[in-house]
Length: 325
Ligand code: PEP
Ligand code: MG
Image (cartoon, rainbow, N blue to C red; front, top):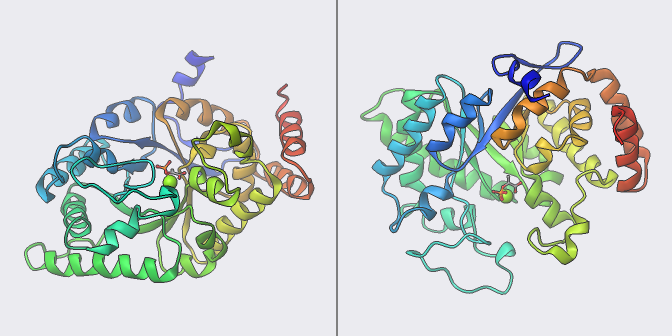
């Protein structure tokens, strides 16, 4: 089976009926790029930049970050790299930047909320480093934990200031940079039509989107039964986000665990999700499954699934359709 998958390393990510998708890798450091390439990734769909910050004993400087992003994008040899700006806080602490203890860290001071608090300190050096690295290959920038339109606009305003500042020495910088946001806060998912007007792409972060929609801590085993990516109500929300993106010519990607879930794949293909970003080790298995799936049959499957009541019913339906058991 694995030998069969290996032949797909250089193959396109395409369905049985010839529809093209992208299967990308999630990475944490530029060193992970080698494996992403080896596993045939169509790009990097999520570079979790917080690992640069967590793996350091000081706030990484603009130049240090520039080197890391440049290494990643050069290593991908022309394939796109989506870098997420700092997503610290929640369960991810920084020793050199102590944050106040919080009752509910996942609902607290994290990610874009920190970046926007004092943009000169962390956000601007990171955006400048990303813009400079974009001169060496296709880089997209994505903001984590956006809930409101105001947050998105504030983040874009800081980004545009960085572009203007850098253009004095680097004419045309940023011209090819795409700007996107994570969809991982329920309000952003609900408000996807308005959000989509203002970004080039969405990337659905199902780990947090499920945590916040089901009100179930993603790291707490006692409530892990509520991790239900195939719950029909949740599938309806995912479909809404993808359709909203497409109504505004915005690309729809997914970079949470659900993107590499084999039962979710036919449903996501049926909804028209454009890009699936996952751990590199899942890419070839997914590409292999994709080539045997017909998108029109997948769309019918979505319609059936959305009429069901429980996650178990959806799982049974998909298993039956895929001939699994
Ligand atoms: C997510 O929330 O689904 C996601 C991809 O981001 P992280 O797992 O880093 O929070
Ligand atoms: Mg997240």
